[in-house]
Length: 106
Image (cartoon, rainbow, N blue to C red; front, side, top):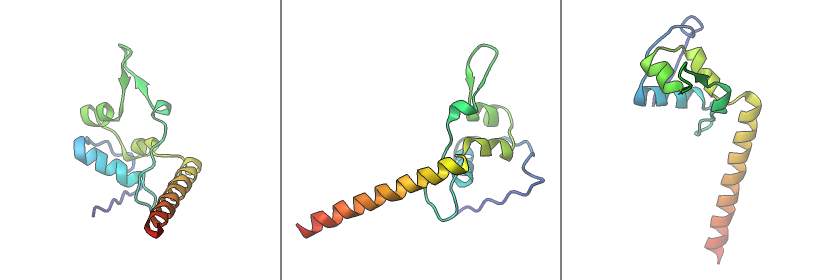
């Protein structure tokens, strides 16, 4: 289990993050306490374009370059989107459990 504690002073600190480290940090940052699934926002809201027209994504920003924790947080769901996402997940899990119990009684 990895705990992620970021102080306000560290939020703007530029660091290099790649591969598993970047994905683990994103998973922790975008998962609400008490939930197990991360909620990522729409990437098109945060895409940047290089001079040659390529889309510069999170890996290029944070692995090739450096990024701050507060920049990473922009890739997570908004509070409203997270509410809807986790409500949908809970509803889906409840349907699966009902379907499983229906099969067990047949």
